[in-house]
Length: 131
Length: 131
Length: 131
Length: 131
Image (cartoon, rainbow over all chains, first blue to last red; front, side):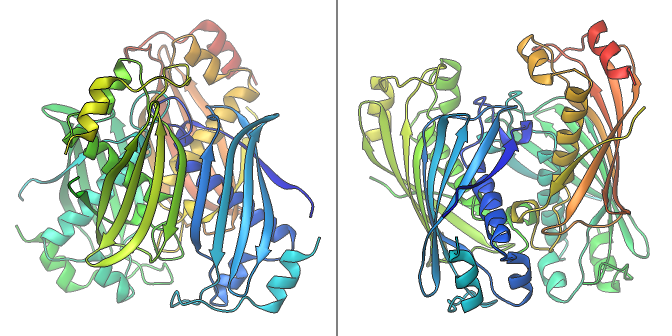
Protein backbone atom coordinates (compact mmCIF):
# COMPACT_ATOMS: atom_id res chain seq x y z
CA UNK A 1 0.00 0.00 0.00
CA UNK A 2 1.31 3.41 -0.96
CA UNK A 3 1.94 6.07 1.65
CA UNK A 4 -0.84 8.60 1.31
CA UNK A 5 -0.68 12.06 2.85
CA UNK A 6 -2.07 15.56 2.60
CA UNK A 7 -0.26 18.73 3.59
CA UNK A 8 -1.78 21.38 5.79
CA UNK A 9 -0.72 24.63 7.35
CA UNK A 10 -1.63 25.61 10.89
CA UNK A 11 -3.59 28.81 11.51
CA UNK A 12 -4.74 30.69 14.63
CA UNK A 13 -8.07 28.84 14.71
CA UNK A 14 -6.25 25.51 15.07
CA UNK A 15 -4.39 26.59 18.21
CA UNK A 16 -5.28 27.34 21.83
CA UNK A 17 -3.92 29.64 24.53
CA UNK A 18 -1.36 27.00 25.49
CA UNK A 19 0.38 28.18 22.30
CA UNK A 20 -0.03 24.91 20.36
CA UNK A 21 -2.66 23.10 18.30
CA UNK A 22 -5.69 22.18 20.43
CA UNK A 23 -5.70 18.43 21.10
CA UNK A 24 -9.09 17.74 19.49
CA UNK A 25 -8.17 19.46 16.23
CA UNK A 26 -5.80 16.71 15.12
CA UNK A 27 -8.93 14.57 14.69
CA UNK A 28 -10.14 17.12 12.13
CA UNK A 29 -6.85 16.86 10.26
CA UNK A 30 -6.96 13.05 10.10
CA UNK A 31 -10.59 13.22 8.93
CA UNK A 32 -9.44 15.38 6.02
CA UNK A 33 -6.62 12.99 5.18
CA UNK A 34 -8.89 9.88 5.37
CA UNK A 35 -11.46 11.58 3.19
CA UNK A 36 -8.83 12.45 0.55
CA UNK A 37 -7.33 8.96 0.79
CA UNK A 38 -10.74 7.47 -0.04
CA UNK A 39 -11.16 9.87 -2.98
CA UNK A 40 -7.69 8.92 -4.25
CA UNK A 41 -8.91 5.28 -4.25
CA UNK A 42 -12.07 6.30 -6.14
CA UNK A 43 -14.42 6.28 -3.14
CA UNK A 44 -16.43 9.49 -2.57
CA UNK A 45 -17.87 9.54 0.96
CA UNK A 46 -20.21 12.28 -0.20
CA UNK A 47 -21.72 10.11 -2.94
CA UNK A 48 -22.15 7.20 -0.54
CA UNK A 49 -23.71 9.53 2.02
CA UNK A 50 -26.19 10.65 -0.66
CA UNK A 51 -26.99 6.94 -1.21
CA UNK A 52 -27.65 6.54 2.52
CA UNK A 53 -24.38 5.07 3.80
CA UNK A 54 -22.32 6.85 6.45
CA UNK A 55 -19.00 5.89 8.03
CA UNK A 56 -18.92 7.27 11.57
CA UNK A 57 -15.86 6.69 13.72
CA UNK A 58 -16.57 4.16 16.51
CA UNK A 59 -13.12 4.16 18.06
CA UNK A 60 -10.17 6.52 17.99
CA UNK A 61 -6.85 6.35 19.76
CA UNK A 62 -4.37 9.16 19.57
CA UNK A 63 -0.86 9.57 20.95
CA UNK A 64 0.53 13.09 21.16
CA UNK A 65 4.33 13.00 20.71
CA UNK A 66 5.05 16.68 20.04
CA UNK A 67 2.87 19.73 19.42
CA UNK A 68 2.28 21.55 16.13
CA UNK A 69 2.31 25.34 16.27
CA UNK A 70 0.96 28.34 14.35
CA UNK A 71 2.32 28.44 10.78
CA UNK A 72 3.78 24.93 10.88
CA UNK A 73 3.27 22.89 7.75
CA UNK A 74 2.37 19.32 8.63
CA UNK A 75 1.81 16.11 6.68
CA UNK A 76 -1.11 13.91 7.67
CA UNK A 77 -0.64 10.28 6.61
CA UNK A 78 -3.45 7.77 6.19
CA UNK A 79 -3.11 4.04 5.79
CA UNK A 80 -5.85 1.45 5.45
CA UNK A 81 -5.05 -1.35 7.90
CA UNK A 82 -8.01 -3.71 7.56
CA UNK A 83 -11.49 -3.96 6.08
CA UNK A 84 -13.91 -6.17 7.98
CA UNK A 85 -17.53 -6.93 7.16
CA UNK A 86 -18.91 -3.66 8.53
CA UNK A 87 -15.79 -1.87 9.77
CA UNK A 88 -12.59 -0.30 8.44
CA UNK A 89 -9.36 0.24 10.38
CA UNK A 90 -7.08 3.15 9.56
CA UNK A 91 -3.78 4.26 11.00
CA UNK A 92 -2.53 7.83 10.79
CA UNK A 93 0.63 9.74 11.46
CA UNK A 94 1.18 13.48 11.51
CA UNK A 95 4.70 14.73 10.85
CA UNK A 96 6.42 18.09 10.61
CA UNK A 97 9.44 17.38 8.44
CA UNK A 98 11.02 14.30 10.02
CA UNK A 99 9.45 14.89 13.44
CA UNK A 100 6.61 12.56 14.38
CA UNK A 101 3.91 14.61 16.12
CA UNK A 102 0.88 12.34 16.27
CA UNK A 103 0.06 8.64 15.92
CA UNK A 104 -3.55 7.58 15.66
CA UNK A 105 -5.70 4.53 14.99
CA UNK A 106 -9.29 4.99 13.91
CA UNK A 107 -12.09 2.49 13.34
CA UNK A 108 -15.03 3.25 11.10
CA UNK A 109 -18.29 1.40 10.99
CA UNK A 110 -20.55 1.42 7.95
CA UNK A 111 -24.12 2.44 8.90
CA UNK A 112 -27.36 3.37 7.21
CA UNK A 113 -29.26 6.61 7.82
CA UNK A 114 -30.70 4.93 10.96
CA UNK A 115 -27.12 4.57 12.32
CA UNK A 116 -27.52 0.75 12.32
CA UNK A 117 -24.50 -1.29 11.01
CA UNK A 118 -24.59 -2.19 7.32
CA UNK A 119 -22.35 -4.50 5.28
CA UNK A 120 -19.70 -2.56 3.40
CA UNK A 121 -20.61 -2.61 -0.31
CA UNK A 122 -18.29 -4.76 -2.43
CA UNK A 123 -17.41 -1.77 -4.60
CA UNK A 124 -16.04 0.16 -1.63
CA UNK A 125 -14.18 -2.89 -0.32
CA UNK A 126 -12.49 -3.45 -3.70
CA UNK A 127 -11.56 0.17 -4.29
CA UNK A 128 -10.25 0.89 -0.79
CA UNK A 129 -8.07 -2.21 -0.67
CA UNK A 130 -6.44 -2.00 -4.09
CA UNK A 131 -2.85 -0.78 -4.05
CA UNK B 1 -38.66 43.42 26.08
CA UNK B 2 -36.83 41.67 28.92
CA UNK B 3 -33.07 41.37 28.91
CA UNK B 4 -32.27 37.77 28.09
CA UNK B 5 -28.85 36.23 28.66
CA UNK B 6 -27.03 32.95 29.16
CA UNK B 7 -23.82 32.49 31.11
CA UNK B 8 -20.83 30.62 29.75
CA UNK B 9 -17.34 29.82 30.89
CA UNK B 10 -14.35 29.98 28.56
CA UNK B 11 -12.24 26.85 28.04
CA UNK B 12 -9.01 26.09 26.15
CA UNK B 13 -10.92 25.12 22.99
CA UNK B 14 -12.45 28.61 22.80
CA UNK B 15 -9.06 30.35 22.74
CA UNK B 16 -6.17 30.67 20.28
CA UNK B 17 -2.41 31.13 20.59
CA UNK B 18 -2.89 34.91 20.85
CA UNK B 19 -4.02 34.05 24.40
CA UNK B 20 -7.65 35.15 23.97
CA UNK B 21 -10.92 33.78 22.58
CA UNK B 22 -10.68 33.19 18.81
CA UNK B 23 -12.67 35.85 16.96
CA UNK B 24 -15.04 33.44 15.19
CA UNK B 25 -16.04 31.68 18.41
CA UNK B 26 -18.12 34.58 19.68
CA UNK B 27 -20.55 33.74 16.86
CA UNK B 28 -20.97 30.31 18.46
CA UNK B 29 -21.75 31.94 21.80
CA UNK B 30 -24.40 34.24 20.34
CA UNK B 31 -25.95 31.29 18.47
CA UNK B 32 -26.35 29.53 21.83
CA UNK B 33 -27.90 32.61 23.40
CA UNK B 34 -30.32 33.19 20.47
CA UNK B 35 -31.34 29.55 20.55
CA UNK B 36 -32.06 29.72 24.29
CA UNK B 37 -33.86 33.03 23.88
CA UNK B 38 -36.20 31.43 21.34
CA UNK B 39 -36.81 28.47 23.66
CA UNK B 40 -37.58 30.89 26.50
CA UNK B 41 -40.24 32.40 24.23
CA UNK B 42 -41.63 28.95 23.44
CA UNK B 43 -40.02 28.57 20.01
CA UNK B 44 -37.96 25.41 19.49
CA UNK B 45 -35.71 25.78 16.44
CA UNK B 46 -35.26 22.01 16.48
CA UNK B 47 -38.98 21.35 16.15
CA UNK B 48 -39.29 23.87 13.32
CA UNK B 49 -36.27 22.35 11.62
CA UNK B 50 -37.99 18.94 11.82
CA UNK B 51 -41.02 20.59 10.14
CA UNK B 52 -38.76 21.87 7.36
CA UNK B 53 -38.07 25.47 8.39
CA UNK B 54 -34.53 26.70 9.02
CA UNK B 55 -33.29 30.12 10.13
CA UNK B 56 -29.83 30.66 8.67
CA UNK B 57 -27.98 33.88 9.38
CA UNK B 58 -27.81 36.11 6.28
CA UNK B 59 -25.92 38.98 7.86
CA UNK B 60 -23.75 39.40 10.94
CA UNK B 61 -21.85 42.37 12.24
CA UNK B 62 -19.57 42.13 15.20
CA UNK B 63 -17.53 44.71 17.09
CA UNK B 64 -14.74 43.44 19.32
CA UNK B 65 -14.28 45.81 22.28
CA UNK B 66 -12.18 43.67 24.61
CA UNK B 67 -11.11 40.03 24.58
CA UNK B 68 -12.40 37.20 26.77
CA UNK B 69 -9.80 34.82 28.18
CA UNK B 70 -9.49 31.28 29.48
CA UNK B 71 -11.68 30.71 32.56
CA UNK B 72 -13.58 33.97 32.18
CA UNK B 73 -17.31 33.74 32.85
CA UNK B 74 -19.23 35.78 30.31
CA UNK B 75 -22.86 36.74 29.80
CA UNK B 76 -24.26 36.60 26.28
CA UNK B 77 -27.31 38.84 25.83
CA UNK B 78 -29.91 38.46 23.08
CA UNK B 79 -32.57 40.93 22.11
CA UNK B 80 -35.14 40.67 19.34
CA UNK B 81 -35.04 43.94 17.41
CA UNK B 82 -37.50 43.37 14.58
CA UNK B 83 -39.53 40.67 12.84
CA UNK B 84 -40.14 41.22 9.14
CA UNK B 85 -42.04 39.02 6.73
CA UNK B 86 -39.21 36.53 6.20
CA UNK B 87 -36.44 37.91 8.42
CA UNK B 88 -35.65 38.50 12.09
CA UNK B 89 -33.17 41.04 13.50
CA UNK B 90 -31.33 40.34 16.73
CA UNK B 91 -28.83 42.35 18.70
CA UNK B 92 -26.35 40.80 21.09
CA UNK B 93 -23.89 41.91 23.72
CA UNK B 94 -21.28 39.88 25.52
CA UNK B 95 -20.14 41.13 28.92
CA UNK B 96 -17.71 40.00 31.61
CA UNK B 97 -19.07 41.61 34.73
CA UNK B 98 -19.60 45.27 33.78
CA UNK B 99 -17.12 45.17 30.90
CA UNK B 100 -18.60 45.15 27.41
CA UNK B 101 -16.60 42.73 25.25
CA UNK B 102 -18.69 42.26 22.12
CA UNK B 103 -21.55 43.97 20.29
CA UNK B 104 -23.25 42.18 17.45
CA UNK B 105 -26.21 42.45 15.09
CA UNK B 106 -27.50 39.37 13.34
CA UNK B 107 -30.18 38.93 10.70
CA UNK B 108 -31.95 35.62 10.18
CA UNK B 109 -33.96 34.64 7.18
CA UNK B 110 -36.63 31.95 7.33
CA UNK B 111 -36.08 29.31 4.62
CA UNK B 112 -37.42 25.91 3.62
CA UNK B 113 -35.26 22.82 3.15
CA UNK B 114 -34.44 24.17 -0.34
CA UNK B 115 -32.90 27.28 1.30
CA UNK B 116 -35.51 29.49 -0.45
CA UNK B 117 -37.11 32.27 1.68
CA UNK B 118 -40.37 31.35 3.40
CA UNK B 119 -42.86 33.55 5.29
CA UNK B 120 -42.33 33.32 9.05
CA UNK B 121 -45.25 31.30 10.51
CA UNK B 122 -47.67 33.39 12.57
CA UNK B 123 -47.05 31.20 15.62
CA UNK B 124 -43.34 32.02 15.63
CA UNK B 125 -44.00 35.71 15.03
CA UNK B 126 -46.41 35.87 17.96
CA UNK B 127 -44.25 33.94 20.38
CA UNK B 128 -40.96 35.68 19.57
CA UNK B 129 -42.43 39.16 19.86
CA UNK B 130 -44.40 38.78 23.10
CA UNK B 131 -42.75 40.37 26.12
CA UNK C 1 -14.06 8.85 44.64
CA UNK C 2 -17.25 10.79 43.97
CA UNK C 3 -18.86 10.80 40.55
CA UNK C 4 -18.20 14.19 39.05
CA UNK C 5 -20.06 15.52 36.02
CA UNK C 6 -21.05 18.67 34.19
CA UNK C 7 -24.15 19.13 32.07
CA UNK C 8 -24.08 20.58 28.59
CA UNK C 9 -26.52 21.23 25.81
CA UNK C 10 -25.74 20.55 22.17
CA UNK C 11 -25.93 23.42 19.66
CA UNK C 12 -25.54 23.68 15.88
CA UNK C 13 -21.81 24.40 16.15
CA UNK C 14 -21.26 21.04 17.87
CA UNK C 15 -22.79 19.05 15.02
CA UNK C 16 -21.86 18.19 11.43
CA UNK C 17 -23.78 17.49 8.23
CA UNK C 18 -24.10 13.83 9.24
CA UNK C 19 -26.75 15.21 11.64
CA UNK C 20 -24.88 14.34 14.85
CA UNK C 21 -22.11 15.78 17.04
CA UNK C 22 -18.78 15.88 15.17
CA UNK C 23 -16.47 13.16 16.51
CA UNK C 24 -13.68 15.52 17.61
CA UNK C 25 -16.00 17.74 19.64
CA UNK C 26 -16.48 15.19 22.41
CA UNK C 27 -12.83 15.86 23.29
CA UNK C 28 -13.82 19.49 23.93
CA UNK C 29 -16.62 18.36 26.23
CA UNK C 30 -14.35 16.11 28.28
CA UNK C 31 -11.77 18.92 28.53
CA UNK C 32 -14.48 21.10 30.07
CA UNK C 33 -15.47 18.38 32.51
CA UNK C 34 -11.83 17.63 33.53
CA UNK C 35 -11.17 21.32 34.01
CA UNK C 36 -14.24 21.68 36.26
CA UNK C 37 -13.35 18.48 38.13
CA UNK C 38 -9.94 19.94 38.96
CA UNK C 39 -11.52 23.20 40.12
CA UNK C 40 -13.96 21.24 42.30
CA UNK C 41 -10.88 19.65 43.94
CA UNK C 42 -9.32 23.08 44.42
CA UNK C 43 -6.89 22.91 41.49
CA UNK C 44 -7.05 25.81 39.03
CA UNK C 45 -5.31 24.88 35.77
CA UNK C 46 -5.26 28.57 34.92
CA UNK C 47 -3.30 29.48 38.05
CA UNK C 48 -0.81 26.66 37.44
CA UNK C 49 -0.47 27.73 33.83
CA UNK C 50 0.35 31.25 35.05
CA UNK C 51 3.04 29.65 37.28
CA UNK C 52 4.46 27.88 34.21
CA UNK C 53 2.98 24.38 34.48
CA UNK C 54 0.79 22.96 31.73
CA UNK C 55 -1.00 19.62 31.48
CA UNK C 56 -1.22 18.63 27.82
CA UNK C 57 -2.93 15.39 26.87
CA UNK C 58 -0.38 12.79 25.69
CA UNK C 59 -2.83 9.99 25.01
CA UNK C 60 -6.56 9.80 24.41
CA UNK C 61 -8.78 6.87 23.61
CA UNK C 62 -12.41 7.30 22.78
CA UNK C 63 -15.19 4.82 22.04
CA UNK C 64 -18.30 6.13 20.33
CA UNK C 65 -21.34 4.10 21.44
CA UNK C 66 -24.17 6.35 20.25
CA UNK C 67 -24.34 9.87 18.83
CA UNK C 68 -25.52 13.03 20.55
CA UNK C 69 -27.73 15.37 18.51
CA UNK C 70 -28.75 19.02 18.34
CA UNK C 71 -30.54 20.12 21.53
CA UNK C 72 -29.63 16.99 23.51
CA UNK C 73 -28.60 17.60 27.08
CA UNK C 74 -25.66 15.41 28.01
CA UNK C 75 -23.70 14.70 31.19
CA UNK C 76 -19.93 14.49 30.94
CA UNK C 77 -18.38 12.47 33.77
CA UNK C 78 -14.77 12.72 34.90
CA UNK C 79 -12.93 10.36 37.21
CA UNK C 80 -9.32 10.47 38.32
CA UNK C 81 -7.88 6.99 37.84
CA UNK C 82 -4.23 7.38 38.80
CA UNK C 83 -1.59 10.01 39.53
CA UNK C 84 1.96 9.06 38.60
CA UNK C 85 5.12 11.08 39.04
CA UNK C 86 4.58 13.26 35.96
CA UNK C 87 1.27 11.96 34.57
CA UNK C 88 -2.41 11.76 35.48
CA UNK C 89 -4.95 9.24 34.15
CA UNK C 90 -8.59 10.18 33.77
CA UNK C 91 -11.60 8.23 32.59
CA UNK C 92 -14.69 9.87 31.17
CA UNK C 93 -18.20 8.91 30.21
CA UNK C 94 -20.79 10.92 28.35
CA UNK C 95 -24.42 10.02 28.91
CA UNK C 96 -27.80 11.26 27.70
CA UNK C 97 -30.17 10.17 30.44
CA UNK C 98 -29.36 6.48 30.98
CA UNK C 99 -27.83 6.03 27.52
CA UNK C 100 -24.05 5.73 27.40
CA UNK C 101 -22.79 7.71 24.39
CA UNK C 102 -19.03 7.95 24.89
CA UNK C 103 -16.28 6.27 26.91
CA UNK C 104 -12.86 7.82 27.02
CA UNK C 105 -9.50 7.49 28.74
CA UNK C 106 -7.12 10.41 28.77
CA UNK C 107 -3.55 10.74 30.02
CA UNK C 108 -2.07 14.07 30.99
CA UNK C 109 1.58 14.85 31.42
CA UNK C 110 2.81 17.74 33.55
CA UNK C 111 5.21 19.97 31.59
CA UNK C 112 6.93 23.31 31.95
CA UNK C 113 6.68 26.15 29.42
CA UNK C 114 9.37 24.31 27.38
CA UNK C 115 6.98 21.31 27.08
CA UNK C 116 9.52 19.12 28.97
CA UNK C 117 8.08 16.75 31.65
CA UNK C 118 8.01 18.12 35.20
CA UNK C 119 7.20 16.39 38.50
CA UNK C 120 3.60 17.04 39.56
CA UNK C 121 3.70 19.44 42.54
CA UNK C 122 2.72 17.79 45.84
CA UNK C 123 -0.11 20.30 46.30
CA UNK C 124 -1.78 19.19 43.07
CA UNK C 125 -1.25 15.52 43.86
CA UNK C 126 -2.86 15.90 47.29
CA UNK C 127 -5.82 17.97 46.10
CA UNK C 128 -6.64 15.88 43.04
CA UNK C 129 -6.54 12.56 44.91
CA UNK C 130 -8.59 13.52 47.98
CA UNK C 131 -12.11 12.17 47.97
CA UNK D 1 -3.96 45.60 -6.41
CA UNK D 2 -3.88 41.99 -7.56
CA UNK D 3 -6.69 39.62 -6.71
CA UNK D 4 -5.38 37.29 -4.05
CA UNK D 5 -7.09 34.03 -3.12
CA UNK D 6 -6.55 30.64 -1.55
CA UNK D 7 -8.46 27.49 -2.36
CA UNK D 8 -9.98 25.26 0.26
CA UNK D 9 -12.08 22.15 0.36
CA UNK D 10 -14.97 21.69 2.79
CA UNK D 11 -14.93 18.75 5.20
CA UNK D 12 -17.38 17.36 7.77
CA UNK D 13 -15.88 19.47 10.57
CA UNK D 14 -16.73 22.67 8.67
CA UNK D 15 -20.44 21.84 8.46
CA UNK D 16 -23.37 21.61 10.87
CA UNK D 17 -26.56 19.57 11.07
CA UNK D 18 -28.33 22.11 8.83
CA UNK D 19 -26.30 20.41 6.07
CA UNK D 20 -24.13 23.43 5.22
CA UNK D 21 -20.99 25.18 6.50
CA UNK D 22 -21.53 26.58 10.01
CA UNK D 23 -21.83 30.37 9.84
CA UNK D 24 -18.88 31.12 12.13
CA UNK D 25 -16.47 28.95 10.15
CA UNK D 26 -16.27 31.35 7.21
CA UNK D 27 -14.37 33.66 9.58
CA UNK D 28 -11.75 30.91 9.91
CA UNK D 29 -11.47 30.69 6.13
CA UNK D 30 -10.98 34.43 5.70
CA UNK D 31 -8.37 34.42 8.49
CA UNK D 32 -6.42 31.82 6.50
CA UNK D 33 -6.69 33.87 3.32
CA UNK D 34 -5.64 37.13 5.05
CA UNK D 35 -2.71 35.39 6.66
CA UNK D 36 -1.54 33.99 3.30
CA UNK D 37 -2.12 37.36 1.63
CA UNK D 38 0.20 38.99 4.16
CA UNK D 39 2.83 36.29 3.60
CA UNK D 40 2.55 36.80 -0.16
CA UNK D 41 3.37 40.48 0.48
CA UNK D 42 6.34 39.50 2.65
CA UNK D 43 4.66 40.08 6.03
CA UNK D 44 4.77 37.15 8.46
CA UNK D 45 2.21 37.63 11.23
CA UNK D 46 4.04 34.96 13.20
CA UNK D 47 7.32 36.87 13.14
CA UNK D 48 5.59 40.10 14.19
CA UNK D 49 3.77 38.25 16.93
CA UNK D 50 7.16 36.99 18.18
CA UNK D 51 8.30 40.64 18.21
CA UNK D 52 5.25 41.56 20.31
CA UNK D 53 2.80 42.93 17.74
CA UNK D 54 -0.60 41.34 17.21
CA UNK D 55 -3.38 42.20 14.76
CA UNK D 56 -6.71 41.29 16.35
CA UNK D 57 -9.91 41.88 14.43
CA UNK D 58 -11.90 44.77 15.94
CA UNK D 59 -14.79 44.71 13.48
CA UNK D 60 -16.18 42.14 11.08
CA UNK D 61 -19.19 42.26 8.82
CA UNK D 62 -20.31 39.26 6.85
CA UNK D 63 -23.10 38.75 4.33
CA UNK D 64 -24.16 35.17 3.60
CA UNK D 65 -25.37 34.91 -0.02
CA UNK D 66 -25.37 31.14 -0.48
CA UNK D 67 -24.12 28.21 1.59
CA UNK D 68 -21.06 26.05 0.96
CA UNK D 69 -21.47 22.32 1.47
CA UNK D 70 -19.41 19.22 2.24
CA UNK D 71 -16.79 18.58 -0.47
CA UNK D 72 -17.23 21.93 -2.17
CA UNK D 73 -14.03 23.61 -3.27
CA UNK D 74 -14.16 27.31 -2.54
CA UNK D 75 -11.93 30.29 -3.25
CA UNK D 76 -11.38 32.82 -0.47
CA UNK D 77 -10.34 36.23 -1.78
CA UNK D 78 -8.56 38.90 0.24
CA UNK D 79 -8.06 42.50 -0.68
CA UNK D 80 -6.36 45.25 1.31
CA UNK D 81 -8.69 48.26 1.28
CA UNK D 82 -6.92 50.78 3.50
CA UNK D 83 -4.07 51.12 5.98
CA UNK D 84 -4.56 53.73 8.67
CA UNK D 85 -2.21 54.66 11.49
CA UNK D 86 -3.10 51.72 13.71
CA UNK D 87 -5.70 49.85 11.65
CA UNK D 88 -6.02 47.89 8.41
CA UNK D 89 -9.19 47.34 6.39
CA UNK D 90 -9.67 44.16 4.35
CA UNK D 91 -12.46 42.99 2.13
CA UNK D 92 -13.10 39.33 1.35
CA UNK D 93 -15.21 37.28 -0.98
CA UNK D 94 -15.78 33.55 -0.99
CA UNK D 95 -16.79 31.95 -4.26
CA UNK D 96 -17.59 28.45 -5.52
CA UNK D 97 -16.88 28.67 -9.21
CA UNK D 98 -18.75 31.78 -10.34
CA UNK D 99 -21.18 31.74 -7.43
CA UNK D 100 -20.63 34.37 -4.77
CA UNK D 101 -21.20 32.78 -1.35
CA UNK D 102 -19.84 35.30 1.14
CA UNK D 103 -18.89 38.97 1.28
CA UNK D 104 -17.01 40.27 4.28
CA UNK D 105 -15.24 43.36 5.58
CA UNK D 106 -12.76 43.06 8.39
CA UNK D 107 -10.85 45.69 10.36
CA UNK D 108 -7.62 44.87 12.16
CA UNK D 109 -6.00 46.96 14.82
CA UNK D 110 -2.28 46.74 15.57
CA UNK D 111 -1.68 46.14 19.29
CA UNK D 112 1.17 45.26 21.62
CA UNK D 113 1.17 42.29 23.99
CA UNK D 114 -0.91 44.45 26.40
CA UNK D 115 -3.64 44.69 23.71
CA UNK D 116 -3.17 48.51 23.58
CA UNK D 117 -3.12 50.12 20.08
CA UNK D 118 0.32 50.56 18.50
CA UNK D 119 1.36 52.42 15.33
CA UNK D 120 1.75 50.04 12.41
CA UNK D 121 5.50 49.72 11.66
CA UNK D 122 6.57 51.40 8.41
CA UNK D 123 7.92 48.08 7.09
CA UNK D 124 4.49 46.45 7.34
CA UNK D 125 2.75 49.47 5.83
CA UNK D 126 5.11 49.47 2.84
CA UNK D 127 4.96 45.74 2.21
CA UNK D 128 1.19 45.38 2.58
CA UNK D 129 0.38 48.28 0.28
CA UNK D 130 2.75 47.52 -2.60
CA UNK D 131 1.07 46.04 -5.63
